[in-house]
Image 1 (tube, rainbow, N blue to C red):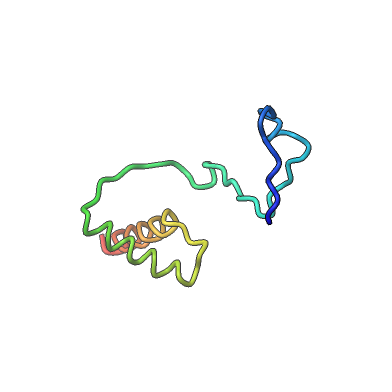
Image 2: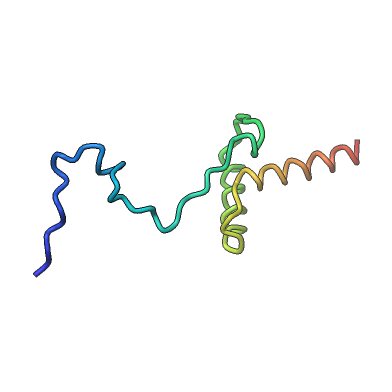
Length: 87
């Protein structure tokens, strides 16, 4: 028979801040917004967003750390470089 979990009734914030709390095995790394740069919002056609998601998902199979923002940044840089070269 399994044992009951300890009761949390009446412990309030102690559950979250108490001495008994253990640190998680793996903590998420918080990256400051300044590291990414400024935010911008663009409205794109649905078919273009689907293509972007398909490319992103295919690339993530080999690089799980790839963020969609990095992919978009690289694609925009490549397009601007091509534009500047041909203009």
